[in-house]
Image (cartoon, rainbow, N blue to C red; front, side, top):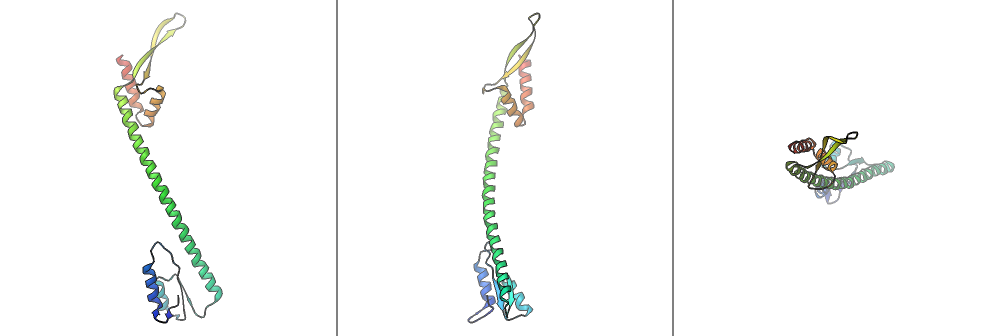
Length: 176
């Protein structure tokens, strides 16, 4: 962008361009001018220029600065795409976490109901082989929900209710 143009002031055009550009967009603007005053440089950069060169121009320097601005733009676009992907991943993760939380709450409520009902106890005799005399019994838990007891004890432990289920089993065994 040249600052001295017919019919429009370069700084005014620069401000207008920046007002019309979304803050999420990066449109690189390189100011080219013969005015080397410090105030002109400050004014252009304050108005939104990304870089500033004074005439006479060195073609190599112009090409290098344009290359740098385009590299920044490419990085900006890449960052935007990455942010969109990260936001999508975060939303999916939050949804998954909420589903897991809901599932855990449902499982915890079901486990509390199972603990309150208590397991059904069955007893297996412990026999002294030499005399075939019953010397004790082993209390075994069974659950109305079915499935092996070790599954329910593992589930209770995973939910932080392992001790409560163990105590319910001991209480049920002692009652019988």
